[in-house]
Image 1 (cartoon, rainbow, N blue to C red):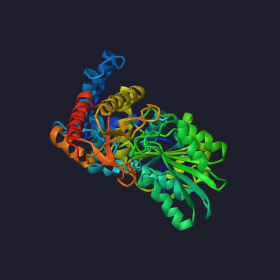
Image 2: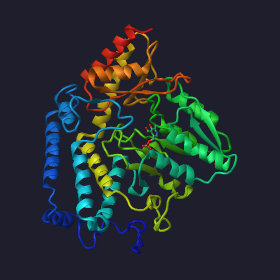
Image 3: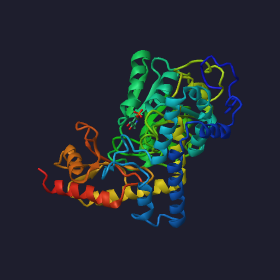
Image 4: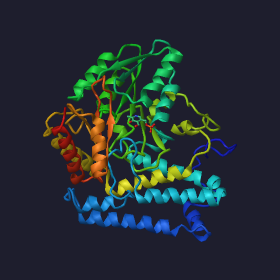
Length: 447
Ligand SMILES: Cc1ncc(COP(=O)(O)O)c(C=O)c1O
């Protein structure tokens, strides 16, 4: 069943396409005027190429050469664009774009199939996504983005006046404003914990968060991938500590999917929101909210139509009316693309590039790195500032000189203002050398 639409089938009947199996459905499509063979062939060629690259380059033995060059060719970048700001929006690999086009074309040419067949396949994406983050499909909510996932938790959790939430001083607006709304509306108390610049250790974070917990604390709501500094918060250790005190944990991991090889079971977190259009290669408009089985009765659904009171699992949070099914298929394709390369390999590559960048930055006079050195506490986001150089000058200079996209981040008054760089797997050390050359040039002429 799907939510709403006056549909009176039972919950959880799965992918039953009115008598057609998925295979039949695609055979039927292929036989219709709607042959999308060109898109399919292009996608198949990409996977064939990745398989052959995987066979040729078994380890990460091609640090800056053929393997990752080959992968980069499967993106659609404008000539010469070097996208080093996945932290805001990332690119889609070709197969994801093809899938998006394929299913929007169905909507354009045969809307009947949109409401009859496509929604039933969403369970496939849910299952793939669950496997990708080591959760069960019953714990996966397909949202539209991180902000929505966070609002589902903040709005859905019963809290009385005086009840407390612990946050950090570096939460994204999409993670702090939902709590500010609750503060205004219900009189809850937001307790803010300062994070280091950079954070030095797991104990530093866990210790300061633990110190802020009181008997009134109901939940910790913390950035996992901290957008200002690139810190990867130790959610596993934080969850363990919080659960010992009977406190729930919400992680804002807008950047996590596609950057890190994550395991929800190991993390032991209650709620975890992510936006796969940043590092995962999915389109905008589709997101993940993980809700641990044990936490599902602790929050109410926020947006509902028929079905919310029938489902007994995370799908009760997904009864929100008509969806863009093309986005769900495209997310499934993005998962396939990353799986073809390998999650561990991707995380290793991203962290290797980040380490290369940090090493280069450390050698530039006047540079302060805001991101932890420790690869356990950092990932693909690196933030830094250069004494006497406006971060905006660096951003403009490297765009103009090398067609390289990075961004400013943080706040001058808080001392966090700087440049933020995303080192996704398709970036080369040569791209990083260009960035470093730009930083060195401007640092040499600082005021
Ligand atoms: C850490 C963090 N949280 C939340 C968000 C909001 O993400 P979205 O706009 O996809 O909901 C962002 C966006 O950049 C972010 O960096």
